[in-house]
Image (cartoon, each protein chain N blue to C red):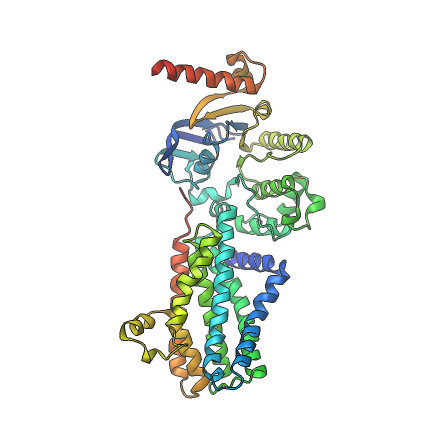
Length: 245
Length: 244
């Protein structure tokens, strides 16, 4: 197995309009692990993910994904990407959506059945996506990302709006994918999902506050859950910037 | 461009439309109903013989413009376009896929409209009927490609609907339906020469009224086709893999 990191980001800066969304980020995401990208909404999680899949215009820095610069054509079959809004066609059935996207990425036909099972949508596969519930909708979007067994999955809030049972099942799925060597970057603004990840990247206001394992984070902040750890880190940075001023 | 991906995209767009029978019915029947209404309005005069042909081009053009610009805008806004742009789908696969799907609908729509105008409303065609159908289809495809192009410059559904009076109405006014283009002021006439719809209306009027004008008609259809190709190219240039 390849030992180079799945994602290497150096000096990444992204501006959207007049606002600096990401300032000078340096990040490495290892292969074969579930890395949680956590942070409050507006912290730059989605922008970072869009930079990784090559959908974001960047102002400075380099983003290297699976050994190639982000956005190169060769990467388009190797990355599965779930945007925050469920980007699937509401006026097609689940199967029709999957068949179309499978054709686009050149995945085998049998893949559609496999991913339907993986996200547990078997009974809904013949239904129009527009008639599904919010949680089912986001699972269709996730299923699309699983087509073609990509080496890297970039998932923007895949568990939002799901009930606890489904969330647990999805995190199990992520872990089993990682054990097969798939690298995952999964964003969430629910801090308690942090404990389910191999590593945590904590993003706040376009900067990395933490990049470590959940245990290390709790240990360093002397807290017992992710919510408290995050609040402790924010308090620290505010103290620091207050001292600097 | 990859023909397999282009056709997969067309098939997907048609599958989406098939799940919406009301749209299909409106799409295929409304032009004929409007042409029937026009024929009835002018039942006591000879006007329908001159206006009828132009309508055969006009209604498919307008309707295809609207549905294409709105469906592609929806794709831009729902995130599906962003997802496709991170996949191995070419920009031309996307645009040409849409053009083929809506072009096919346009062909069916035009066949129904021409058939209705000729056999039910009694429009006399001096030239070749197949040539008339060709012109009507070219018009609908023109509307499709202009709609694809317009959707690139609209951020909301409201804006895209406003493009209809902005981009379509001037072409109708200057197209020679209300008064022959030769009687317009010189400035307007030269502007009109440069608008694609003027050429399709010219072609429609020639093919219905003049049996010996096939050469002119084909030349005008050629100009319309060039415009359509131009809109497809500019439309695909507006698709960006990376955005702000």
